[in-house]
Length: 400
Ligand code: AMP
Ligand code: MG
Image (cartoon, rainbow, N blue to C red; front, side, top):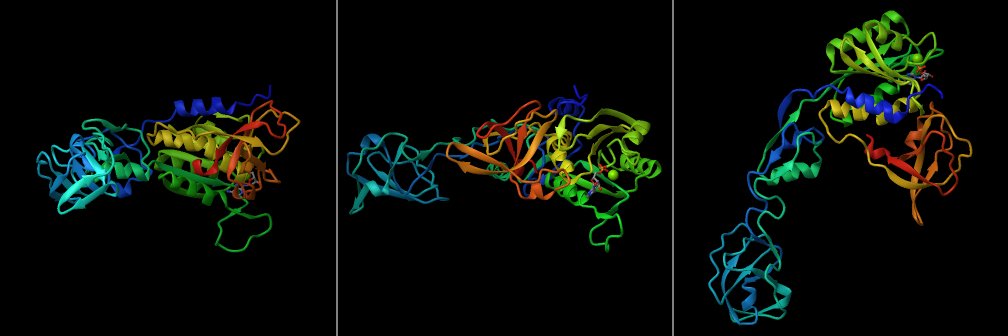
């Protein structure tokens, strides 16, 4: 039809060409958030390591709950528990070890203690209020597989196993090129005629950093074949992947694609995506290359949808694609398009699910369409949309 590559096909091709993960390094837990685990983690202990009480109360034998039970010991969290003598109960507190012999904990609200003897006021069943050994993590079980991106609670789980450090892949080094002779770095002075500030460098660097990647900033590259070739060569010699913005369209001032083909090869170019059609992917001197379009919204969206999963896979991550949620369109789109469209929308909670309302100006040059939205709504190729139709949406927070 249009000769444009479907987004799904492009992503599949790119992921299949992601390089093997970088080398492994061992990091303290607190330096490993967002990093990708390089080895399976197998539990060397059970968590919890012993049966312990889930409540403040009395440990006893459930079968003896109807008797008057002398309180034979007191066990607090961190203390030791002696075997429970038959016909007695132990005063016990949350987190304390359940004494051998006891099979339940009666909560203190259901108990009365008179003259050192316990009377239980409600029936007790074996197992009540006991957190059994290994209920969180069984001994010798696989806790996480290699390839997992570590989240804060993952680090906590590793800590609960007694681990102080963890093997992860070292951060991928990503060379970032901002192409465009019109670009001026923010903070470096006023704009001359025809100039604009380089916003993509900041957005993309922040996106890369948020993924835990290392940014090799290659600065602004002028729109000439020579400058583009030199920048690509130097990027290829200093990084694991190359990411550029701008210069991948069909204009005479767009030199990136041509130089990639000269110094390496182009695998794909021009996607059925809106915004972001001119995205390019290939390699330069064997180093993977992703050329994002220059328009700030296009570069942001294509980073989220294509560069992000590719870079995460190259970083060693298995799960790289964001979750899609259903939302109802709070708009209509009577004419079908020939590109998959990613509308910048605000999601609100409606009567029967999420409601997606697009930002008024969807131009690819309007970065505030992203800043004033919280999701992307996906309108497939050839689809029309009526008010109330269900669409897939992607939360921006899960894309960064
Ligand atoms: P290009 O893809 O190079 O044709 O650029 C498309 C549009 O995006 C042009 O209006 C450029 O001026 C603009 N643009 C390109 N690179 C950047 C950048 N780094 N920051 C802000 N705008 C940019
Ligand atoms: Mg340009």
